[in-house]
Image (cartoon, rainbow, N blue to C red; front, side, top):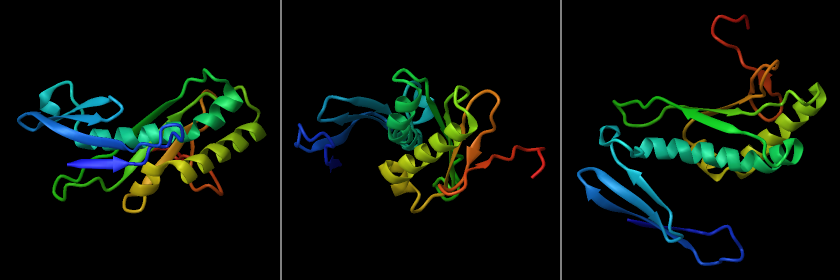
Length: 172
């Protein structure tokens, strides 16, 4: 199967062609016309991504890329950012009933007002331009938790009203 997507780079208007080729029993290599490759297969095949893992990595990558301008503008071009994503598959129905992302970035250099403002801008950016998240959230609940680093509580929630995350055993 070949999928064509629009290339976001205006200097290269040609569409990107995506396809997979079978390399063995239940194993494939995914390709793009830009030369990228990814190995796909079941977990027991070793150093491959499962399709579900690729879905989650696409979501995490899109979230990171969507937040990148706001984070690097405020925290510096070399700001370390990690986006983790998880979600258990419902094997009986073969789907992910929910996914959780955790964007980890150290905001300890910011005062409270700057931190709240940056978290709002990051959340807005992800909500507005993460195509993968916008697509998936139409059918799968996705929670984005932002871990601002030492001395600050992780936050999550809708754009208007980020709230501290309640951890197991903590009071609501």
